[in-house]
Structures are given as C-alpha cells and as structure tokens.
Image (cartoon, rainbow, N blue to C red; front, side, top):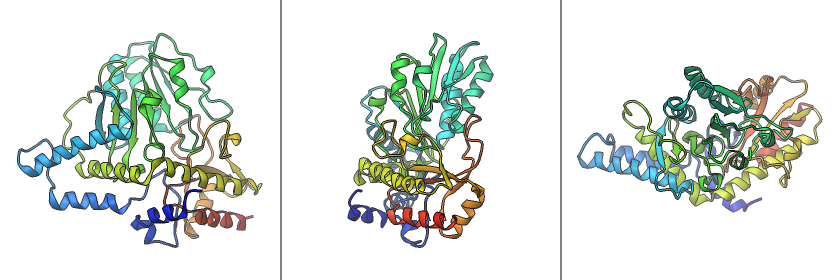
Length: 381
C-alpha cells in the first residue's frame, strides 16, 4: 500500500474522522467527509466576501462572480479538458444534472421512434430522467446489456441510425466496477455519451479527453465538497451546445467555492495515489470476506483481485450474509462503530432485488478499519 505517513497526514486533516477515533466511517459512496481546507475556504468566503454572483457591481459581488468563473475553469482543468467550446453548469448534484441534460438538451431533439440506450441495472437516477424524456417525445428507452462480468456487454450493444444518446455509468455504485465506458465510443463514434460520474469524480483521475464522452455529471458532496452542489461538463461538439432552460437564479456560491477547494485538495494529495489506496482497501476487504463462506460478495468474482484481468474495482465492496438480513447486519455493525450502508442502494429495476451491505472507502480510511470490520463479521459466524 501507499506510504502510511502520507496517509496519516491526510487522515488528520478531516475533523469528523480525527474527532471520532472510535468510529470507522465506511460510507463514502453516499457522501464523503470534508477536509479542513475545504471548510476553511467556505468560512473565509462567508466571512470576508459573501455576496451574490452576477447580481451586483460592487467589489464583493464582483469577487464572487470571479470566483464562480474560476471554479468553472478549475473544473475543466481537473477533467483534463483541452476543448475551447466546452461548458460548465453548476447544479445541485448528479440527479438534477442528468435531468437537465435529458429535459433541456435531449428532449427537444427527440422524435417518435428515436432511441436512448440506458443502463437498467445501475442507479435509478441514470434511468428515470431518460424515461421522462422518452415519455414526452415518443422515443424509446433501450437497455444497455450487462455481461457476466457485471460490465456493459459491449459486443451485444446495437447502435442504430435512430440512437440519439447513450447514458453510461463510469463506476458502478454497488459493485464498484469500472464499467469500461471507453469501449462505447468505438461502437458509436457519432452518438453523444452522457457519463454518470457520481462514483468516480474525486475518487480517481477522470480525463474527458481519454474517455471522449459528451457530458460528465457528478455530485460535489461525494468528492469532499459541500452538499447541494455538483456540475455538468458538456463537450458541445456532438449536437447543439447545452443551454439549461429557464432563469438560472442565484448559484450555490458556498457549494461551488467548496468544490473548487476540494479539487485543489485532491490534486495536492494526489488523485492517482488516492485511487490506488482505495483499491487496496477494497482488495483487503474482499480477500477477508472470501475466507468466510457465510458471506457473498456481489459483482464479478474475477474482478476482486488487484490485478483483475476484467476490470478494476474502485473502493466499493458490497456483500450479504447468507442468513442474517442485511438491514439487521447494518444495525449490528453500527453498534460496533462501523458505519456502512445497508439497503437496496437506489437501484434501477434490473439491479439487485435483495438488500445488501455496501462498504465504500476514501483516503481517510485505514487498513486497521478494514481489519476491525472483518473481525466483527467473523464474530457473527
């Protein structure tokens, strides 16, 4: 694993983690903890320059407007965007962002019989907006098929002249798999791809140049920023440029400033190192679970190894006990100071039908916390 000194120095920067040494927070796929640098950036803004952006001409308002513009530029840099026509639109999170793309960009272009390829076994937020757009226009929503590796079955995907958009997930919110989205472009060189990056942004490096997608949508609160903020990055080359409909209203200035500070923190900490750390914790947990036949780890079994020939898992491990209800198991773990998510994880209709326990890591988690979780799970045998 990465240097322990590097990890301990980063872990100490999270007040919620440092202030609760008896608690292991293992639910970062739901929301991440915030480093002190992000909290300081927000407090500095609120106490030295709080004003509304693009609504006044006095210095405080001008500085706020400039900080929002700087956050847009920072996001393009963070996504390795070299385009001169791309756009950034701040939203409340992934769900709103996907609905904006579906309602304001895709729906006006759709005609009866047009097709949208959508994952039916991922998060419901990446299904419902596209179904709404189809219902308004007479278009059809077709499933992105899965294969036995719990990856998009790229060889089975059929792109027709009526395909208007592919909605894809970067990292699966239950299995933790990299869904190998880059393969989709070879199948559909001219079809826009909208990427749900809720579980990848701020967890691993994300290059829009390498992926060649047309939209990236994410939530800031999963990437160490404040709740209620997120963004849509749009390439603006395949199809018309994205222009959200209606009056924009006041932006979430505190949230946007926290997002810019979070990107600075993640870059300084080293996003590739963070991704490697989280993967190593996931491997440590799955290796421990594999020695206990009472537990079933969900997803492709071949992808559990660190050197997986199938795809990488990125710090998310989901499992069930074969006899104990997962919701009960979540309460048992919480009583031992192990905070996990235990439910059905907001999955779309073709996802898992039975509740499970999801453990999700970030850089503030430690190998000792994984071992502590495994010890608790062994005692239940």
